[in-house]
Length: 189
Image (tube, rainbow, N blue to C red; front, side, top):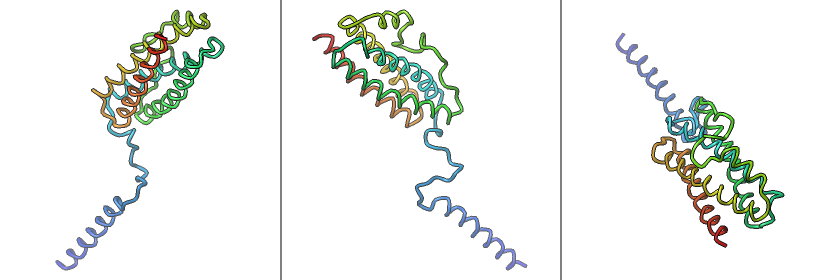
């Protein structure tokens, strides 16, 4: 009887060990039940970062779209194109994170959503401007807008828990600080 119990225990242990070994077999594909790294290890600061940065980026993309037809300054046109190319994919990424985290995306509308956001009146004045007046207004507003994004990204670095969100925050700081420097130089020229 003891031999039968011992043998059964060894078989059960073997099955258990085989299952454990299969869970970590060196495969780079995670098991279907394993959450992605974006879904894992996030906190309220990560959610707030994504929810706040989405409308912030949406307004920057909207401001970038206003450049066409309002200025012929090559540097402003180039900068607007780069803003749009960088921030539109970041919006998609943050929207995907929020879905993975089971959190709602940011509410519609731009006013009052974080530092550096332009009011509806600011946007109307920008839409009505042309040429050198447009360039000056657009650069000043985009500097303020970028400074707000940098502030939000620094908060994410300090308080966030998700590695991917923090990496995006650092990327935002690096890119937008460089663009702020570029915009100040354009204003000074």
